[in-house]
Image (cartoon, rainbow, N blue to C red):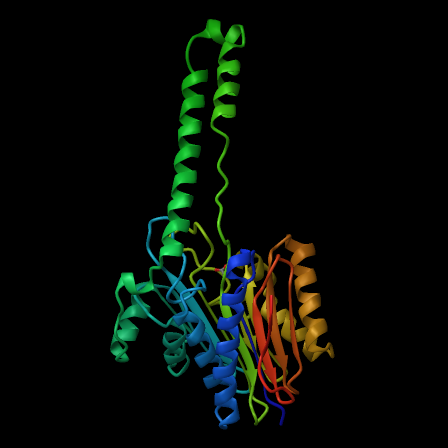
Length: 332
Ligand code: GLY
């Protein structure tokens, strides 16, 4: 059987100075997953290991390096699935877990499918997984991103309050349009702040092993400026990841839109109905654009080892390795 692995480092806009480093991280993850496949390991082991490498790399928004929620907490989501058994494991809104994908793997090995928040932590402890410190997950890059979003909110609130102040008093001022003039001037002095920064940044891996078994894994710190408790597509089976006997898929992007469309499952269905891996990826992301105006990308591998990947954002770092190659190819 033909083996293959594809990994991604998240759809979004990658600043020029980070282009090389995020591709190198994907290459390393693909190489580690490939080694497992080559040694006769399962696709499930390969995608877990590859996702773990990306979680440990502080340059991605997953595990160490995850983005912060508005309250400053670090809440992560992850999920993985094995195609031929349809076994699924996922965790959502978990804190203090160094490798959420490995906690998801423990869930997959249990009778559960999805565990969240405190209950997931309790499960981690019951299964002998130790918790890490908040500082182990926090990176300077994400802390700065969070500060920038907090500042933007502060300026916008201030702007709103000043306008209220300017328009509320004296009927006479209103009569002569003075309040509106003051308001206009204030709005010009304090332009509305957009929340900046890399918006997405999920990681993921898909693989097919020597037995033709498929598996998919996805892990994320979520979107920038997320509400505490917000859960996106990454830990939702059929949305941010999926695997069956035909294909394995991992998604990245603005999760709510992937959830609306059950996009990972749709991509698997395209393959089941005869599309190539590449065409299935293209059709799925085209649907994301046209039906929801959503942003993101996905990677896919089919049971014959054909790979596909596409995105509608500026970039999506990826790497893949198939049997006829000497080393992983990367791009973004
Ligand atoms: N795709 C990651 C998220 O929306 O959380």
